[in-house]
Length: 65
Image (cartoon, rainbow, N blue to C red):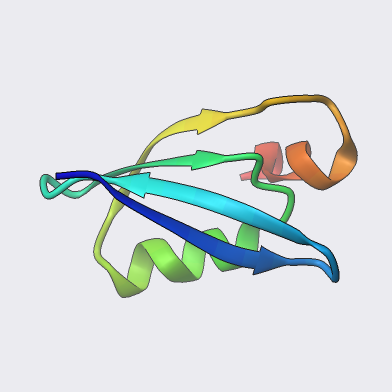
């Protein structure tokens, strides 16, 4: 089963996480890394994929991970 979770980012955006029951997680448009790291740690997930839908800074800044 896949779980889809939205995490608020900045003042007007969301980061989307999709994970399975095997502990793997994909993140969509992760403009801010700290909420992603927090969610991964809290749920004991491993980041497996980063999906970028477009090149705006509020969607791609997580590449700094």
